[in-house]
Amino acid sequence: MDKNKFTDKIKEGISVNEIEGFARKHTTEAFSAIALIIAAISSSFDFFTGPRFSILFLAIGTLIAIIFPLQTEKGLKQFYTFTFKQEKMTEVIFGIVKIVVALFIPFLSFAFLGLLGGSSYHYFIRHGQIVKANEPKSARKVAAEDEHD
Image (cartoon, rainbow, N blue to C red; front, side):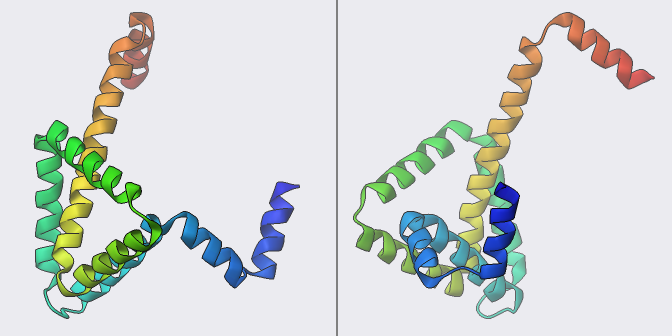
């Protein structure tokens, strides 16, 4: 039944009210997605800076987050906590600033994206190591034997 609702929704389309409701509920995510698209276009077509700076700053942001995971996580939490405590209008202003930065200085958007990606990478690597360390020795032995078959 849910699958039919989904396909019916695709056939009907999305109303303007539904888009507005989504944007109100997910303001930060919507502006971040728009800013990332604009940064990619601006960087790809060499509007102000080329893709080389964007790739470089993405890598630098990722490396910083991997090398300094606790500091990066603390900084990101503070940033997003501050952002979500603001009124809706202030969130919109932050979103507009994000879009302007993405247009004129896209490598900063990619550096921030690198910080988020590196932080996530570090989190999932540690999570995998903890899961592996906590699994029973018999399960590890069976998995190792399966790899050699």
